[in-house]
Length: 241
Length: 241
DNA sequence: TACATATAGTTGTCTATACCAGTTCTGTTT
DNA sequence: AAACAGAACTGGTATAGACAACTATATGTA
Image (cartoon, rainbow over all chains, first blue to last red; front, side, top):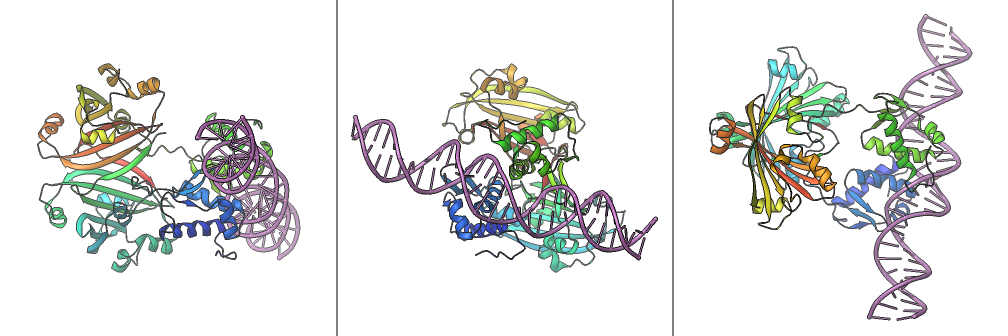
């Protein structure tokens, strides 16, 4: 079942296996999963190791425990789309829609003053400018424009941006995104946006700008998205303290 | 140091002690706290018990660990504008503006279907409807409409809502707000909003709706705010995983 | 039938130990 | 003085076992 010689810790392998069994439909929300003792026998590890895996999954919201009863599969939490950073695809999936994406343009341009400042570049240094239409259930949802520093990703191509950019960055730079600052505002659609989003001019659009920072503190990207206000609400949960 | 006969688990007592030592200034952000082995000797418990306390505190953001180096006090996360719940007044203060507020109406009305559902009331049960103009630097910033269940706060008055409502709720009910779900969307101003916000009709407005839940799970309020899009951006920081 | 009691199952807490992997300091050698 | 090697630290992973607290079910008794 598990690979004891793998460099991956046992508790991690158990987590992945349990998640996989959840995805496959073996466990549905509300189901009680086998007890800690049963799982420790099944995976041939100590109960504490199973507990470590399960504690992580409880913290991540996959499971919940009830003392004296057992451990259960948690409901899929639809209501917190943006707690951790969510991609457009994940976001739409959580909303029960199918995401698709169409590349409109991919070009290298000198940074504007605004973008240079946000990416911590000298003025007129080159940046990639990638523009996409993001669709949900085959209807336009947002126009997304991404700015990336050329110096950081000199070998970036169209193919890469259409794949998993974040995966590429991790492999290429050994860094990942640590956090982002997000700004949300309301505007009315300009002609260009109206055409791409297939809405009347002067419709309301929700502008979301995300500035992402890598784990070493380098600004990584500026993403400006214009969402159709008639189709999209931004939802988040906030907690006290 | 710790009370071994207390019904409180040892790891919990350790957490509380460490937090108290942080509050008292013994540990400041960035400081390395004693190693797990030292603490286990100090508290006279096993290292695993210390680890359980520390793992919880890492998950809660009080500490962070670095393999081979030690465990450190985390920075107080000030840089999260809307991570914790912020009042309009605090929000404006952080933006360097002076907040003021004018009560427009305070009335009792039967709940609409939407509000009844969100406040978990029977249809047509009474709710308070409080409408305010929120201003920053003496210029209108938002129109805020709050819905509160009458059954929860039967003695609510105009004076109270103009003071600290949250303080009143805590004293009156012994409960406080645990979390809120927030929905943000873009619309165009209707006549009423345009007049109150002193903007042209068909200007863009940022609608923020906040549904707050008390610590016992009771829905507490629905707040709908219409912000002037030319003056207000919603800003938040988000973190990976 | 109704109520108490046992009992077997669950998670919760805790111990004592062991080894691994990464970091830092220290003493020795060059 | 600089470079290396190793010791002594750090947290990370894992074991085997114990008892407590809680829940559900079955059993016996009034």
